[in-house]
Amino acid sequence: MIAFRVFLDLDTAATAKALGMAPGTVTAHLSRAVATLRGQLVINQHLEGGS
Image (cartoon, rainbow, N blue to C red):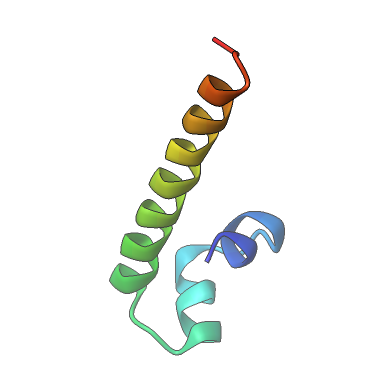
């Protein structure tokens, strides 16, 4: 999802069409993916002694 939306710069409708899913599903998956990545970054920064 992140690759389609961020790296390929597709909007929600184009991403949904490319993946064969509803736009709301794209939005939900993207939200969860970003939250997961954000959580991993915070954990990694903490483990590395960052702020």
